[in-house]
Amino acid sequence: MTRPVDDATTSRRGLIVGLVLGVPVILFGIRSAILDAHDTHPAELSRWLIGAAAAHDLVLLPVVGVVAWTIRRVMPAPAWPAVRAGAIVAGTLALVSWPYARGYGASAGNPSLLPRDYVGGTLLAEAAILVVTALAATWAVVRARGRTRA
Image: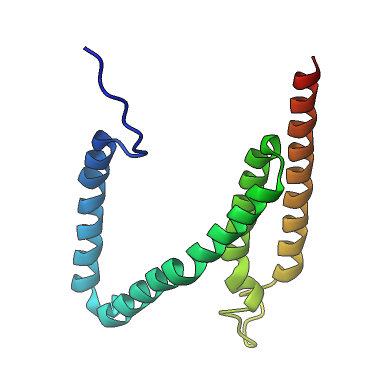
């Protein structure tokens, strides 16, 4: 007997495993935040989490969607996987390096807290990602054209 084809991207088994593993972790986090309220400040933590979720859903997600949609329409099909991977890496680096580049946490009394040129380092790393992505995308397009000619 064959099973019907399901076009869903998440299997029921995966959902169950995710819930079995994820719910206890979430409950442990909530419990810890409440028990250590003097350190975690649950009201402030809740505002931050809700604000981060709202910023993600209302700002970051639409921007990423529009950028991905635009890139997908411009790039040749063989280049898309490399460009998508490069965009994910570059975007992640930009998000992670933002607080350092902005200097959050810097202190005039302790210059060793943020001792590097984070803007320059981030730009250099982003340039390297761009070069590697361009080379990989070009190689993919050349390979695809070579296959169609043969």
